[in-house]
Image (cartoon, rainbow, N blue to C red; front, side, top):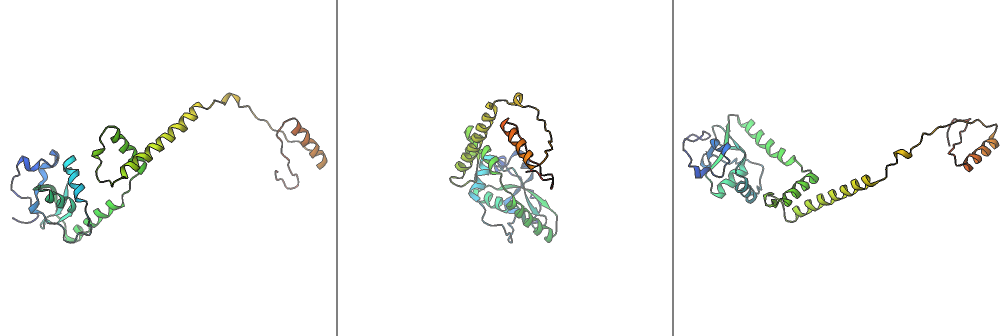
Length: 218
């Protein structure tokens, strides 16, 4: 059988149970695919890849170069499927030259590594799973990482709630606001200015001294 060509062998229903129904028509036997011997992305988390497939079903596709069967996206998933003993994996064959295949493989791996989590949102989502007893569905976290993210999100939410409640309980001072009017007073000299300012302060009025020579306020 020519490499990179979808095999004619027909899988049994049991051999496709790990693949979600929507992708089973794309199933390719693992023996008809070749891991990329020049794959620069190493150190796949195979245990968690297997666990995620067991939990959610295989719900993505890998890609392979048509004519060679070399995998250009999904080498880690292919390895995980083989380790688990599954025989089929959803795959799309792409007709492309070697430069395009290599470029796609590098780009896909690099863009995945460039992604970042919003830890605040992540913590809130994990807290929702925890409240629904669904935290076991969160796969791929290190020991203690889930607790840290959930605790930080919970503390942030509690702080926000307290601030909101304080704002809600604060008295409405809208009706206490009064219009403010100003007036510019010209004094005869500096002594007259000081005398006038002292009188205004005694009456509880807010006043400012204006230097008429420079035009600067003090």
